[in-house]
Length: 243
Image: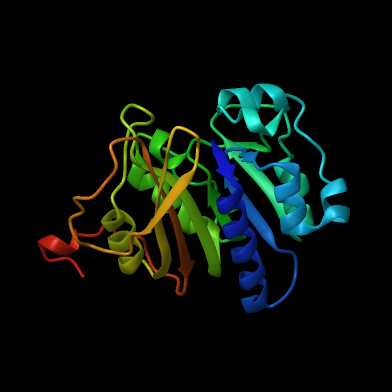
């Protein structure tokens, strides 16, 4: 689960704007798994400045992480997510189904969210986890339930990526789910990459059938805002008489 420079920038933008809407207090972020930050040092300096960058430590296994993501240009530079979120002004809690060194709390997202996490967070980050949860509806409910009203959620999920996870997702999945359950969907962006990892981005805020998808893996970056507290219910797809 890796976040590239564009996605990290989107999360920084989201935190900045959520803080403007909040009533003060500690800003809290919940991450569904610990994200690998695939951003070079010059890119991070451009985002947060030299002084803040110097306070962000590197992951202990940074070189292995960069190789695993085929990000050889990073030359083993992988900043630590908890440190970076501290620079964003946010507490950071990472949950996972297994106890890794970076796991703050073991949680199985296939099962209902522990009560201690319900309604406690200003931001939820899904850095590529939902597609690996077989009980995907419960996982979405857990993500939604963890947020305070006024909080935001960021998903990075496959739009087309065979056997990467259990699922790939269409924009209508998020548009229909969030419209029904008290959220406003702000962005859905399709991201695809060429052989040199150059990204191509397309706005996909649409219920329409798409026929211009690239042949290779496609990712979706999704941002939604929780505007009211509602009991989570399962949507009917709009094209079959949904909202």
